[in-house]
Length: 118
Length: 113
Image (cartoon, rainbow over all chains, first blue to last red; front, side):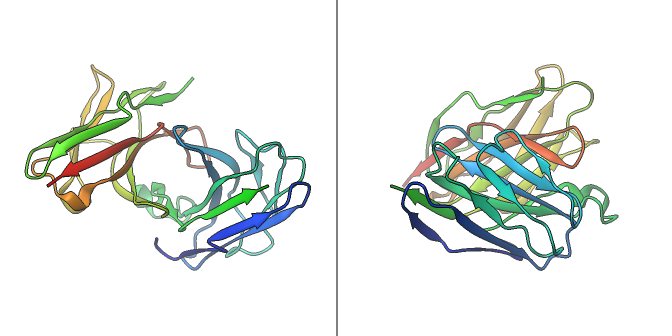
């Protein structure tokens, strides 16, 4: 899983509560991403960030928020507005802005956080 | 719109036999294509990518993929499957800026002893 850590591995919350998922990388990558994985649907992009203090909505950003105050960290908050938050969440990073050429196009993934909301 | 399709939900192979996991794509311009593998309850691991050049791309763990522009395909192959290859495989294509990827729905590979 490269140099990306996600915590916790499993997370349980009651409906109506906000919850924050942690993602840290020590790869010195500028770009970071959050994906949601549901069975049979592949990965869908929630948010992405190219540099510190900048982030963009992905395909399914509603009900989620992020921050990028440090290069190493890209936490994701699942808010109570997210209608179906139970899923497996994956964080990734890439060095495509770091002068790595084609190598920079490869995304490195963390081990994931499985969120269950009841 | 750019998209990736993996037409098989599951592929079953006997150990020692060759395996193929299929992927087709739809993009405007030249495609940048990737294969990732996911073991249970883990993140994705990069296997290989096609950017340009030779149509046969070699990657990790003995896997290779063949880029076919006329058929818009990028099938993943391995000459001799191992039980330990059993996992979920994702094909992906690069889209737009910021190195964003579009993933297929995934194909579960089951290699039987």
